[in-house]
Amino acid sequence: MSDLPVPGTVRLIDAGGDLSVKHGNEKADIVLIPQPSSNPDDPLNWSWRRKTHNRVWQVLWTFIGVAITCALAPAYPMIQEETGIPMANITTGVGLMYLFLGWGNVIVQPWALYCGRRQVLLASLLATSLTVLWSAYVQSSGEWYANRILMGISNAPVETLVEILVTDLSFTHERGGYMSAYTWTLFNGAFLAPIASGYIAQNMSWHWIQWIGTIIGLVTTVIMFFSFEETMFFRKTGPVEFLQAGSSKDIEQQQHKPAAGEKDLPPAEVDIAPGEISIPSHSKWRRYIRTLRLWGFRAPDQPPFSLKLSLLPFGLLRYPVIWFSGILIGSILAWFNVLNATTAENFGSEPYNFTTNQTGLTYLANVIGSTIGCFLAGSLSDAVAEFLARRNNGIKEPEHRLWLGVIPLLLHPAGFFLYGIGAAHKLHWVALVFGIGFISATLPMGSLIALNYVIDCYKEAASEAIVAVILIRNTMGFVITYAISPMISNMGLQNAFILVGCLGAAIWGTCFLTIWAGKAWRSRSAKSYWNIVEEHNLQAH
Image (cartoon, rainbow, N blue to C red; front, side, top):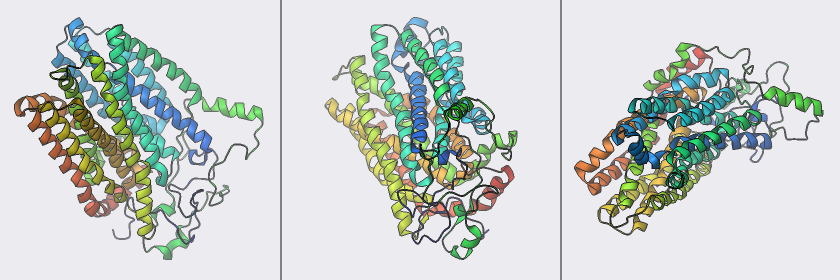
């Protein structure tokens, strides 16, 4: 057991330049993790421009998928009035959608891993768009439930696939920044869509929300077919990834070695920038036509699909790291639901008496807060992890990112106390909006810290680990959806929000427990984890 590498502990800094491995361009002492191959089609070797093109489509796909899913929220009272579906049943349908946004990944994530990301990305947006169209015509509770369940399954990849797309194109030391861009679109698609849809519902009809969403989704699907490249690339974990403190005596045996027939790239050069290689115009066209394929991207030695592997997320639930990340990100969904469930009622009642449109504008506080939170837990977390790795003899531990938990530990209770107590005592609406902003800053921080931590810990099984985390999160969200209204009714607005503030602070406090115990948890999981990696021939992502 002691000879096994601890999952997630890697050498990020090569200060002395002693390792014969590939290093970063901007900082020559940064070890690239994972190590890119010598294949120019390896997404890690793509030019900055080519990567950026794909990243833009990733976040656009996320934003549109989330926006057309959440846009209907302001129109729920109109749906109740027109169709006769009780509001309780509408809420139940929304809860079912959140449940299947998590559990649907048990089906769609293995598909993305073994058939390609592009297939799933296009099929998901197409199916989501058609489900949105159907929702404009529902007339009964049964139809509504079925529509919401299908919506959850269709749009499930928005919860887990983009994290894998980010790791396909990014190295460990830069992943946090790119994950923050994804998380920003994930949250702000939900925050901004109700602002626009509220105006559409009030000035046209709630049906137009769905019709416009369908048009946007279908047009985006067609454009993405011609614009988005497949990023699946099978790459086995390189020996450099196991370099631990005190392992310098084995460096000669652990140096990166290119595969037979491959020419290694210079250590400080990874991207193949446009113009470095002259490609005839007809070859460029052939390469472009090849990128339009929906299949044929699997490597010969890539493990085949198996039912056992598709159930691996349930096997990973044995690890404390998964439960820590799942509960942290699950609590974020809970606080998001608490905020959403009370905003319209608080601002629509005395003494504020906001109209639907005015209430929608309060979501701008969510946008500002989440933007700040994305920066803090994204690029700043990369910088903190690098700083602490330099102080730790070049060794990076996944727990280094968790120190940022001190910020939401303070902001979460402050935000809920200001918002809840302020609403109970009828303070000026500005106080409530500031509370919403504080809360919103913590939401993407929870998602980013939890997801980056679990990817850092178990990156060879990152896809399956993320699915396990999302299963915990969305199951928590489904349960808490039913608890919000009774909790506020029984405890009162002030006491309920004081409780939520204290619960959130306690959960954020587990970051510091994990900083202390996390490496021990990972060390105890090493034998079973590396057995899983070997048994399933898992790639480095």
